[in-house]
Each structure stands twice: as structure tokens, then as C-alpha cells.
Amino acid sequence: MSNALTGIAGAYFVAAELSQRGYIATVTSRNTEGIDILASSLDGSKTVSIQVKTSAAKQRERFSRSWILAKKHEGIFSPKLFYVFVDLYEGNQKPDFYVVPSKAVADYIRKAHQKWLNNPTKTGKTRKDSDMRLYEIWDESEAKKSLNNWARLGLDQEGK
Image 1 (spheres, one colour):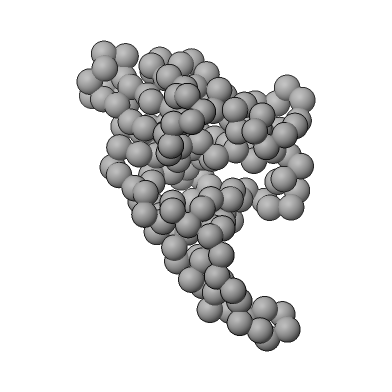
Image 2 (cartoon, one colour):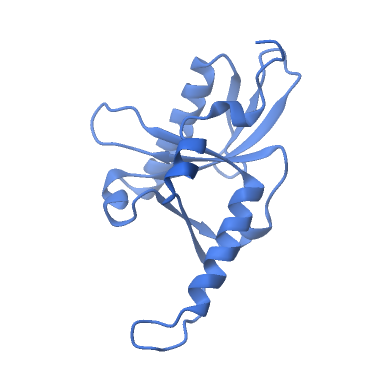
């Protein structure tokens, strides 16, 4: 599957999952910068924006639970903006969804990139900066905290 189709599939899987859970989810136009899905509670009183990043099985063999972002994502965060990192599987297996607040993503990729820059290459050379950033979920406690945790979006009604 091409990268474009992988991304589109991820966005529609997230929208379907949100709809199945009783939320309103609208996939934005593919040329909408920074927001892939607008989601709200059924009564419209709570809304969030979602950026979807999708990794397919072929890519995941190389990067276990990791997704590529751009440098600009270090400065894109809001209490109402979330990332949903999607792990697509081959066949009919349901994807895994990691729901992460945008501030946590921005902080992580900034710190991880600086750490990468500060560590020399295997040959001892200084690394050259790039606009690529890698968001990884290696820590099991973070994986458990974010895996399929749709409540992090804050769309549930009080008292439910």
C-alpha cells in the first residue's frame, strides 16, 4: 500500500472507531493543514481536533511503534489537539490506536531529537540536523496509557 493510501486508511479507521463509540467524527479534506479529523460529543458541547499518523506493518517491522513527523510538530500543540498514532495490520485485524495529547508529542520529539543530535554516529562524527522527527512508544507504561484510550480526548459526557 502506498504511503498516501496508508495515511487515508488510518484517518478513516480513526473516524470509524470514534463513530462506533458514539462520537461525531468528520474527516477533513486531505489538503487541510494539521487537522485530519474534527470530533465532538454527540450533543456538540465538546470538540477536539485530531492529527492522524499511520504506520503499516511493512514500516513497523523497521520501526516498532514509531511514526515519522516533521520539525514543525515541535511547535504545534493545544489542549484541544490530539494525535492518534495508528498501527495498521495486514488482513482483517483491527488496528491499534495510540491517543496522545499534542503537547506530549511536541515535548517528546523535541527532546528525543536533541538527544539524537547530541550523540555522535557510530563512527564518532557529529550528526547533521534534519527536519525529520521520530515519535516512538517504546515505554510499556506509555503504551498502556495511550493504547485505545479514547477517554483522553475528553469527549465523554459527565456522569457517564
